[in-house]
Image (tube, rainbow over all chains, first blue to last red; front, top):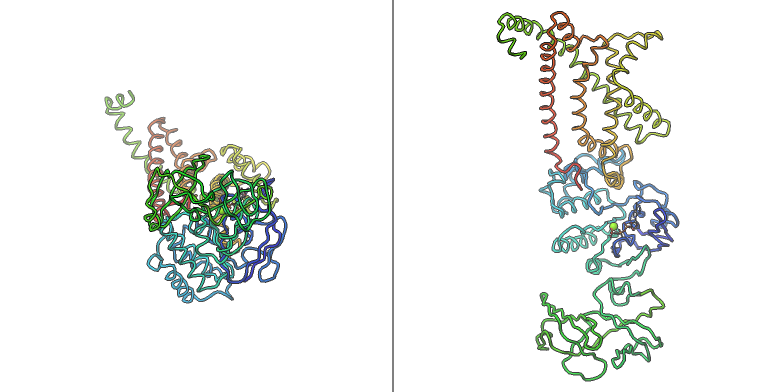
Length: 356
Length: 238
Ligand SMILES: Nc1ncnc2c1ncn2[C@@H]1O[C@H](COP(=O)(O)OP(=O)(O)OP(=O)(O)O)[C@@H](O)[C@H]1O
Ligand SMILES: [Mg+2]
């Protein structure tokens, strides 16, 4: 089912939680809703599910205006931020209930329900836990019950609010891969909330980046990562190094030091360049003035990558670089060395255009 | 001193043993034929009243809410003894005469209904909002959500305080003696009035009350233990 959100606004008292939100989602997409805490992700999801009313705007499912349709009739599966399992029911009952409470005409028989529930429990790898109560499950298991419960009613849209929020890194990674597979199998239009950019980049077809109740950018993981439309998006999607200076003739200048920015040909007295740590190149000799001297203050080796913290010799600002272990070995550098740093792939934003 | 005077006086000791053995049976009989039935019947009726009162207060329209609220406020704001007197001694003056036992049933049921409705209301309201939302999100109607999701969980929350009310009620039924119900305490009064052994006879009555309450508190513990087996996290975060 396709979803259109048209100019939706929502306030809680005098606080505006959503400001003129518009999104088009195609049928079968897996969308990540990414943003910092309080940016309105849960609110948007709840409005889509009909659990929260909206002040302005409209929501369309498959072109049909469902703004005033009750949650029950929207056929939306919802996985809550804190699972919200029915704690007086076993795992089996939790999953079965959505089918059991259907009106007699559309209700499957007892055997059909049991068969369906067993299939779902197998899918979420909980077939041996069907008689347990939610209080007897681990966080990851509860999460999977919540997912099975939402899928049991065959929703046309699946909404997941930080489905892996409370889990440890390894389980998160496992579950998100598994969500991707599940999605490939079921083709249910799905939106999941996260504030983990890696999670969003890893599994989503498209990412919606939210901030302060507004949408900052919508695009494929590649688009938002490579071409962030605002400093906020750039900052939010990974670590950054910041260079403030003057933009002139395709170069960002900081005194003698200049960084090439061939895509920016206008002139601005104030500009801010952003560079990802893996686009910081470290050299041992000064060959031109597109590098700046810095002292290595820290070296972390994290598996196959090496993170290097540096302090600029000229202004004392800190920089962060990321190298492969191989490259790091070839460079033969160590803590305390003075090296020359060359920023590449500079992304320039003009402060007047954004509030940086 | 009281005990001293008993044990140094064989005649008095014998008299007390006689009184004990002759009063114990009528007292127990009073407990079994009136105190316990009064408690069980009024608690049952009271729970039904309480349940609908609680539903009316939470889900009712303004009119139902108003009625329920007025009822609870009046019952909680006036002494139980006064309520019993109005029913038994007051109503006959407007031509409505009700005999002692039914009067007691009416008075206590209304009383239990009001207090227990507050317990049930609080229990229902204690169930997190997200449980409702989860119910709606898998396609339940409001009444299905109430019946299948909210009430079962609220029951678990309400049982300990309701058990307390029940035990309170056992003892409160002694007030029925004042509207001539021949329950245990009334019998104790009658026996003591003939032999003047007030301390002794009332102590026997107190002992029987205590034993009954003790038995029920054991039963209460068993019920709660059973519920805990299913749900360890009632009132917890999830
Ligand atoms: N029922 C409510 N009443 C008042 N304010 C609310 C309500 N629900 C949300 N808000 C406010 O709206 C803003 C957005 O909340 P929302 O829950 O959508 O954030 P979120 O992006 O999901 O954050 P998180 O990542 O922390 O879950 C917050 O500032 C929050 O305080
Ligand atoms: Mg949230």
